[in-house]
Length: 123
Image (cartoon, rainbow, N blue to C red; front, side, top):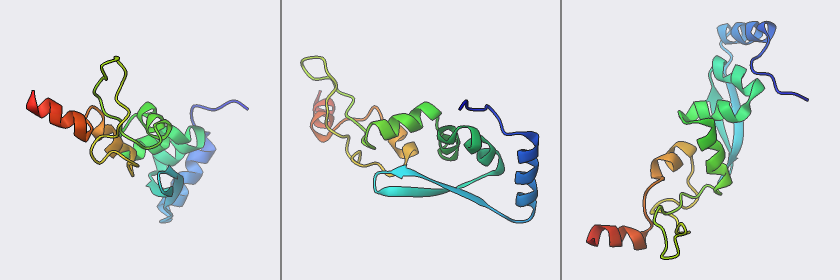
């Protein structure tokens, strides 16, 4: 099955009629503590029909790639410091373990864990 880039004009019309009748739309996605329900605008619902990840990213005001990276990272914002061997530190940043929403995860990227945070302050 191939994925469409946009919903058909008929579907868009149905969404608009439902919206005009006062109906709201919600969808759920995986999060660190189970499912997270969000409200979708009509345009986000249209997007959801073709690309759910892009629609959820739109809800949070982030990119599709950031939304998918949040999930792939296990909802953990990892320390930005490199180890002496040149690898990224595996510790979570302060407040970065099981980050509840992807927009918060994006905001935490580039921060440091408690160990490296102290080192950067003292340098």
